[in-house]
Length: 432
Image 1 (cartoon, helix red, strand yellow):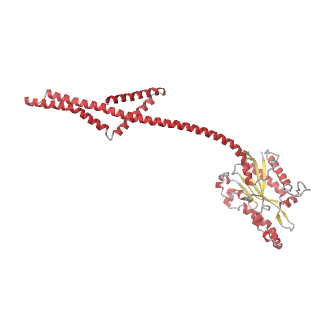
Image 2 (cartoon, one colour):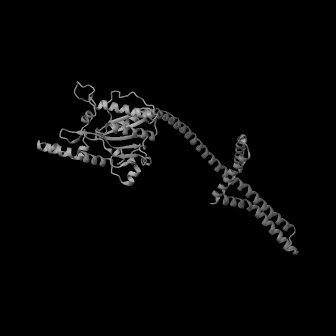
Image 3 (cartoon, rainbow, N blue to C red):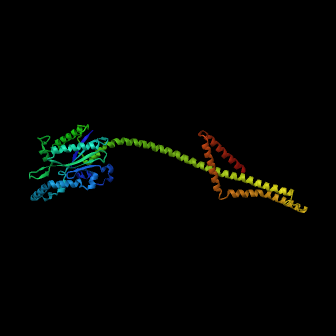
């Protein structure tokens, strides 16, 4: 794996603020932070020792920012007061600054290091990173602790890859005997020389370069001691140092490059899905049209069936009723008796004549009665309900037929249904 330790003090927005490290901000809109796991982050500072983030909240520990200001106040107050007095004496009071301003000065503020083993595609467990870093900090204190002081650090387990943010300050006595934040003098006292002693100090020729190389080797040695195989060759690539946020972004770039291919594949799949959905929508629309046509067909069939039923039933009922009345009347005409009692000759003649008139009237009025009954049933406000009942009955019967037959017989059902519709249509035409 790639084991890295990146350092920096400031970026385009000024000196780095430790609020990111101890989560002294609202992480609600930070999508890369898991707020539930955030409570399990490990924090340590110079004055209060080690604890979880949840314990920091519960015990209301001071923020890393407050701890660093307190450390600067404790260690560098004499330097600030002395330097301000010298500024006043030399007529440059505008150069005076407070402890807080010294702590945020781009050259005097704490340096921040980010420790990480692996990347988003694979990394060591956070416990291993914790063990490696604690051992590193122990040896760091033993070797450099006289002039380099760790003020705070935090292990983040709430992001994609576990990593540690650690902040330290370089200091050494100045020519006035005051302890002051000064990196080059501290490294000189620790025995580090310029890479090119015969050339002046510069961005590419300073004591920080051999110091960082030595510290990197120590970190890699400890990784291997804990069973982690790491890349030994540094890969700077001629790039300028990246800020903390730029470093986080750079770690995500490779992930983005890898996911771009996945996104393209997903887009192709999405296109296929959209095409499939479009085809299915076309089929669905066609099916909807067919269903509406079928519904209209059944509405027409139900209405025709109802009317034909009315015609058949009414014709038969009126005819049978009329025939029954006429038969009874003829029986009376042939044998005009009342309650078994015979009447006189004149009464029988009168009864026969009256019955014959009634029979004749029934025959003449049968058609009128038939038309009246048909009109009453076919123009009734209840016709719609009757037709709907007929339709439901037809659909129910067809459903029973479909369940009672195999799929292979669907064609026969459709054929018989069509024949039934044609028969009803023929009967309707004949009736009209």
